[in-house]
Each structure stands twice: as structure tokens, then as C-alpha cells.
Image (tube, rainbow, N blue to C red; front, side, top):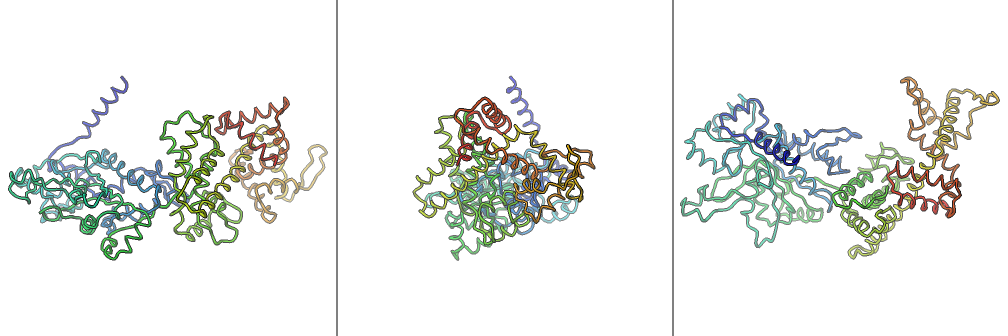
Length: 631
């Protein structure tokens, strides 16, 4: 009954959104909301902006794309700022076809699908409302009814911009049904919909021998020619081509460069002049964004053909590379897996991460910078500072490899291998080692890659395994340290006392003997070395800790063990190093005593409650780390 009530509410909302009136009524709407008459590019730009924008690491993150596309923030910023924004301001780029170029499974089709679905939703809001001449097959802008001689006066009066002419169908309708009285012409609210073929279209090339240009521009209805007596009568023509129905919105030209030349010629005048030729009519105006996509090889073949120079100058190419951030690659695989119905299989922590490390490493280019290898580059791209490099070095690395991300392992291959691992599992839980095994087996079954490429990818699987080894040890380290949390807090307080004395050139009083001692340099260095703080940087690091401590004190906040991320990591590593033998013995012994069993159960419970493990993969992790520490 709740759902039936929801259906009733939905129908009621549909009725509220619908609107019909006359051109005279539409002018009243224009007075209040002039933006309803904006052109297609402006509407798309407003749609993207309306979703919100975040400034993140000096890059604008457009929330419109954030639920579906990951790791493409810079690319999307460039797309919006260099294409949609100037096009919305009626600069010349709106007369260009947007060509998305990139490797397979890089997100090009997803991006276009988001623009389509977004337009459909946006047209149902007040900000994105679209109005058209009722009965027009191209749902035309009603302002086209205004005679040319009166347009300038109207534009100055209502502060709107008018572009375009009536289509042949509306021109005849105005004369025959309304006697030229534009104020009486019926106008309705239009809801863009690809399913209903209103304002959103898709053209897909097929066999050149069978495909007709009518698929783009409409066709003659020969059954009505005898009734209307002429092939130039609009009533004898079907304005149902993709260019016709996409008016006021967007047309996707799939695999445009594979298309027969005669189809591309129609885009020449549409892109530059905003109109196209159909049947025996004058040029027909169309307000729509044309977006196409292709891969790099097809684009290179296209530009090498001199016959394509005219169209080439009317194209803006936007590269859509693979994602290069491990954390964002994890989001891609997580999204794809959640679309399935595999709800009963648990994916252990880091399982998707090791797959992402493998993928991203295959896409990175070697750097010429001294001391920079692919693993360091991968971590730097993912927001980590690595030895010898910081985030400020990122731009220089990106400039050094401008085509980075245009090749490498595609997400489809990885998700195929993940699917294989998920389906074959007997334990209802897959761990990182299962994933790495599935990736390796996939390479063995891959007939199209060369031996050199296979060896290169196998090496990346080995690197991902080494990275996982470190992650596994850290995970168990954190769980064990939790069991010794009081020890961690004591070590932390001890370190702070020594740092404070060091920075103030003071002594430390022994709590038992009251003897004044120099700061314990050995203790401080044993902690700082855990996170790679060199001897030359120890003073700066300690001063940074003291500044943070003072800042907390001024705000009447307590400086806790977790208040400084790097110091917390150093304390945990130091404690874990001291406990290493305990961990090794506890995790690897086959017959643990009562105390060891208690410790194992505490650590396992911590892994399950705090880190997302299930009992199965928690025990697997402990066994695996035990074997690593015994090596």
C-alpha cells in the first residue's frame, strides 16, 4: 500500500509539472525567468554547476560527476572550464563537436550517459525548465516565432538572446492554423527524454551499405505525397532523424570516426552554422550539443586523411585517460561489484586495493627524475608524500608524461578477473591473495599480449604482492598495538616530555629519583626513524610537534595519541617493532597457550569490529602475517 501511495504521489507530481499555454503566456514566463530560453550548451553548463563544486587540492571537483566517475577531476575540470563554460557564454567553441578520446573502458560512454540522464532530470526542475511549440516535431524554442525585424527590440526589452529560425513544420503551422498570429500559438513545457526521443538522441554507425542518411536528418513519408502533392511539403516529411529530435539538448555520435563520410558532411554546417540540410527544405536550425567518442588509433587515422581537414577544424578533442589514483580505482571496482547481486560474498579489506595497485602501475610512465620509481610515483599521485618528494612535485611529474594514462590495463579486464574470483570462491570470502592469483591466471589465458608485456604485468603483480605484505603487517600491527594501547600512550607521553625539553633546551626530571637528565636522544630517534625522519630534519619535526601541542593547548584541547598522524604512525611502528617477536610467536604457533590464544582472539575481534574483516579473512590474515614474520 505504501508503494501504491507513492505511485499516486508520482502521478500527481507529473500533472503539476505539465504546463500548456499560448505564446503570450510564455512571454510572461520569460519576464520572470529569462533563463528558460537559454541555448543547449548553457543549459548543460548550468546543470553541472547546479550540482555543486568543491575546491579540492587546487582542482575543482564537480559533484555532478562524483558518483560515477573517479580519478578524473583534472580532466573534468578542463572539460567544464575549457568547453562547457565558454560554450555557455556563446563563444565560438559551442560551434565545435566535442570528441572524447581515450582508451577502452576509460569512462567516455559513462560521461556521455551522465550528461544525458542529467539533462532529463534537469529539465524537470524549475532551473532547467524547457518550453517548446506544441506540435513541433523538433520541440522548437517559441521565441523563434518572433519576426526578425522585431527581435532586437524584444531582446532589449526582456534581456534575452534569440537565435534560430522556425522549422518548416512550424512555419506552415503558424500560417495555416494560426493565421500568422504568433501570440495565439500553443506552447507547452517539454521534458527531455531519450526514451521519448525528445531533446536527447544517439546515433550509432552500422553497415555503410544499409544505413540511410535519413537516420540523421529525417525522411520523406512517401505514403502522404499523393495527399499533399509535393515532396517539399513539411507534412509529407518525417522530422524524426537524430539531429531533429536532439534539438534543444544533446546528441551522442557513437564511434563517429568509423562512420561513412556522407554522414560526417552533415556535421560541417551544423557545427559551424547551427543548421543542417534535410529533404527539399531550406537549412534547418538546430540548437544541440554534439558529443562523440573514439579511441586514439582511430583518431590518428582520421587526422592523417587530408579529406577530413574541414571537419577536423570543427572538432574539440578532449582526452579521457585512465584513472591514476589507487584510491579512486578502488571506488571504480567497488561501484561495479555493487551493481551485481553477489551480496553473500565478503571482500576482504585491501582485496580491491591490490587490484588497483596492479592497474595503476601498468598505466604509469617511468620518470627521468633521480630517485623516482613507479611505486613512489603511484603513492605520490594518490596523495602520499614519499621519500625525497612532496605533493608540490606532482605538477612537474605530470608535465613530464603528458600522455600518461592513455594506455595500460583497463578496468574491464580487472573486473572480469575479480568476477572470476568471486564466482569460484568456496569460502564466501576472497582476500587479496585470491585477487592477485586471479589476475595472474588471466594473463596466462590472454593470447593477444606479447611475452614482454606479459612479463611486465607479472612484475606489477609481484610489486602489488609486496605492497600487500606491508599493508598486512601494518593491519596486524594496529590490531596488536590496540591490545597494548596503554603502552602506546605511555610511550607517546614520554616522547612528548623529551621533545618539549629538547626544544626548550631544558632538563627532564626523573619521576623516581628527581634527578635532572638530558632529553633521551636515543628514545626520540628510535621513534622518529620509524617514519623516515632523517637526522638533519629531527629538529624541524620536533618543533612541528611542539607547535601542534601549543595550538591544542590554546584551544583548551588535549593533544592525544591520535592527534598527529605521522607521530601516531611512528609510535605504533616503534611499539610493533618492540613487540615483533610476540606477534610472530602468537600468530604462527600451532598450539598457542592460554595467554597467546587470548591475544589472538583480541586481535581477531579488533580486525572484525574495526577494520572490516570477517572471521575467515581475519584468521587468514593472522596466519599470513605469521608466515611473513617467520621468513
